[in-house]
Length: 228
Image (cartoon, rainbow, N blue to C red; front, side, top):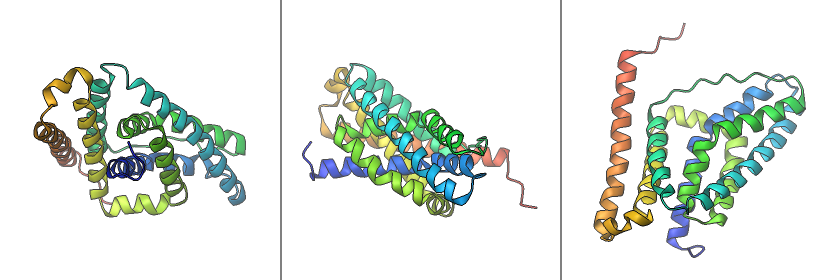
């Protein structure tokens, strides 16, 4: 994949979108873990905790990029991404993160929580990178500062403009479709470009439409109580 080609830029855009929509929870974790510290300590914890989390995220993603070259794993990864995109559309997450009162504990909490919560992010980014290690690193370097230093603004934007989540789910579904059609033992069935693109569009439609239906049913069954 050539640098600054349309394919490269599209993949990079996909990675940044995936990082942003899936990393909102990680930004919340950072805030919760550091909330009991003094302001000057909070800044230190946020920087060090994030750096530690990013290093682990980079190595984990590169490992998955390599693993996806094993026959059959592109199909498995694609199916898992379909589920991740569906969950992104429908799931309302609770964050039970204990606030820490010292720097070291807060940093460890951030790194461990990010590693545990970041598995969906790692798989999605690895799939969107199409084997490009440079794309993984560039995507993280672009999106992580936005998430860390602009997390409050970004989370408010998601609340105000829910279509951002839909866009993220669609990008993840598109990535899933591309992974499945690139699976070596399925390539024979997707030689025709029109069939390949139609399949990818069907995956996107499936995730977005079923996600909306599930979310609507959840809201109808469990309506939110008005604020007191």
